[in-house]
Image (tube, rainbow, N blue to C red; front, side, top):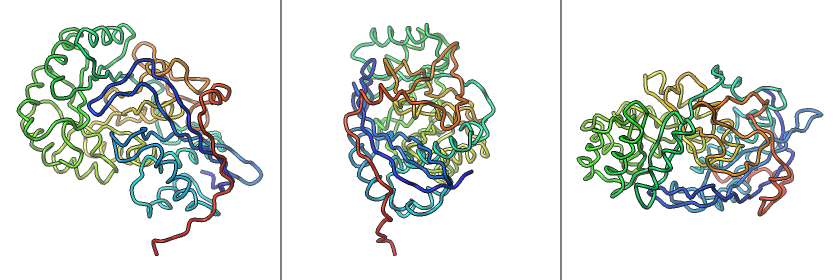
Length: 384
């Protein structure tokens, strides 16, 4: 691992239209307003640029974070804490810890520094974290539609494509009927799971237990993220394994949830837990306790999708993740080597760095704002 100095970089906003609208219990997206972070790292006589992607959404609906706030926090509160000192990616989380919250913004900064470090060292991310698999199973996440016939047509197309697992978004009023219909459509042997994105409450536990008849792989985050006790009660009543997503913000939090009995499966999203290095620690903590994990997605471009695939190649990721091909979301990705799914799997990137090469020409075409960062000024410390 090489230690370097931040010499500058940029914040870049891009706009990409989704292939199809993606609707969940908290809203519908037709396009992504993406914040990218570039950091120029000096390693002796060499300067290497690394890239990170912030997975925060335009509005604070999935989490308290949102793109405009993340850009401000990165420029005004994070980069200054890393100025003027030699650092490796492993050092970033400790330096940024005094800033409370803002995990997605922190993850983007750590990601850019990690990408630069790996590129300088000529090391693929999968090798850095000890992943050994060369391909991983590819699941697909299917949003909410206006009618079950449209849903069935979409799922049928994904089955034809060869996806290894189907995940359905659900919400009150869109659960038993569509889930039952899709189970009949795909048969009992295809893994099927559901994701509620916190849309239900404790009084819905009996209703949620009716999903047991469909032989689901898991039910993901049915209750509010702070309601661990409610998830414990659901887990006690339901035969469908309960998986936590929004509730998990760190390895320590995952351990607490597991020991309380709130979940038997964990969805790991690197942006949500503060970065890929903490994501690895979540994986390790779950594996030590015999709890299955899988890699979630946040509609990432190729910058975030490639390291997600590498993360999912770790041994503890025993369930198919949301590591679908880039063409599931984008007509054209901003990388020259987008993730492609064949025969239900995607290849683990072997490119030094986080696993991608940028399509600079197209990136410039979809850029809506760009702010150059000179070497960051040391932060003014107000934490004593």
